[in-house]
Image 1 (cartoon, rainbow, N blue to C red):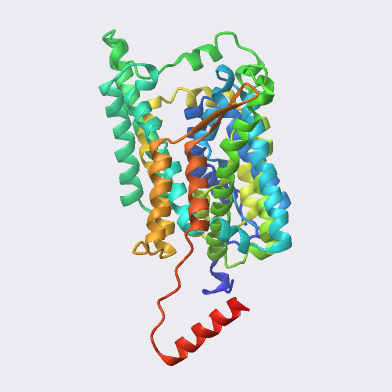
Image 2: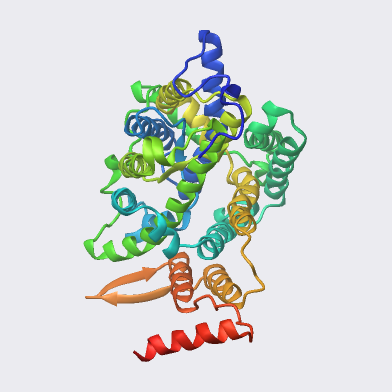
Length: 473
């Protein structure tokens, strides 16, 4: 990748450090703010540990930075792409199946490492042949739109068993403030629209809850303060330092059976191939920002291994998958600060924040309707990124094969086509995302691109006759 702009337009290059400690702290804080809301939204939706997820983001990023020789300023945090897969695994055996989540993340990490080794040996052509844009784009759209029901249920209060108009109001405040901050905000505000949107939603929820308590009106009591109350009821070390928040301490909570392995494999493996393609795209994007070819140095094999191993470790710590965060790539692009040292500092601070229980219990009081309102945009962003990919790659929808491939993926995925069967008495489920992706891959292989119609000139007739003669021989 050649530099298209001046190499020195970066304020701080990858291996440079800020001159002042105060500047160092502020630059690191910016990265934390950029990833924080999206990071905590995943465990809020799934029901896993928020502190452990935040800690895993810091630990995972440090693993990535170490494996990439401190050459790539990437931040890893919880992935939305695996929400459906995680939800399925977590619900196996009656729910709270942290061991199933960890196994799913281990499968993802193993696939990343295998693909990294194959890419190192054979390059990337085979991957893009198996998963061209016409397959990956619609699958990403399915991942985003397939989560729409979850966002609506959180927004309306249906997940809690009651439809609540005040919760909808609070969620819509979070939505609109997020959109306004992103669209009209200056450079700083536009980097953290979700922080501002969720803060506005939480503030509105506080007002409603205050009215509810003042008027003894349960309908308006949107915020549940029990996490804060419970944390300080019997004060101990864990009230301030959350050392027992990790997923591996809760592996016995769910009824795990080895017969569930195939269901877990089929839930996570297809999505991992899609996120590998996203990984490549993110690194191409970041490489353009910092004027370096990250696919060559440190190399795609190292970046994939870093991402995959971080996800496997994250599965043990919190049960969530990790992924490269576009929000933090945007921070690098806007600030022109590509310093890996800044990101390392942000990781250490993130781990410390995750262990700081008083802050974490406050985060746990964020109402589902607030995350639901923000999720209307977040999930839409996932779906829109699939559309953007199709546009950027100029996929031609006047070609019938492209329409058939996209149509099958979208309808099967959004419609919820799952395949259920049993092996040796053990129920196995292939998720709708996996089914949609498999259909897309098969159709892409079966429906080959047609050759352009030949003209009727003598040269073309001669070439056609020669080709037929070769076939006969």
